[in-house]
Image (cartoon, rainbow, N blue to C red; front, top):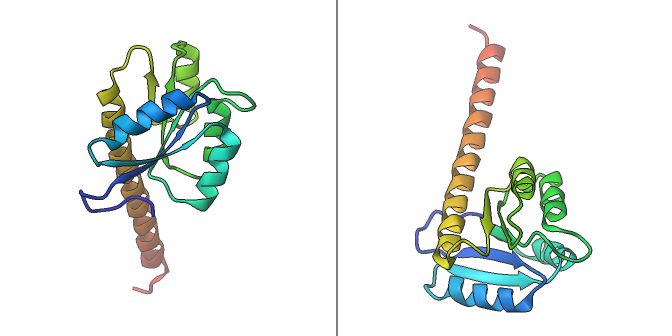
Amino acid sequence: MGLTTQQNQKIHVLHVDDDPNILSVSKDILECDGKFHVQTATCVDEALKKLSQHSFDAIISDYEMPQKNGLQFLEEIRSQKNEIAFVMFTGRGREEVAVKALNLGADRYINKKVTPKPSTANSLTQSKKLWSVKKLECNWLRTRKKLISSTRNSAW
């Protein structure tokens, strides 16, 4: 599926959190305006399985979870060269976690306790747009590289 060009297409989100209540509430909030379709997972392994079976536009991940934390999940996603929009959504407001998340390639870091709910939807939309710009930029650089290469190889 990946990113779509039509404005009316829903943003497909995978939300990963070990608290089923948070997943339920965030799913209801994000889906209420019809812009998002949310699937949930209660652990990283379940999330990885869903990622292998479905296409998503964005991931929202809690930081603190059993087995693997959100940073380990993000690191695994990025090690697979997956540039999906990734939002770290956590109740832990530690600065070092935010810095690590951003350094590993997270698009946003949101503290559950201080961020109002509409901000989460806005961050997802902005992350999707940012990801789209990154993808266009990569395509442009590839095209430019091919053009330069073909120009060098052509006989004048």
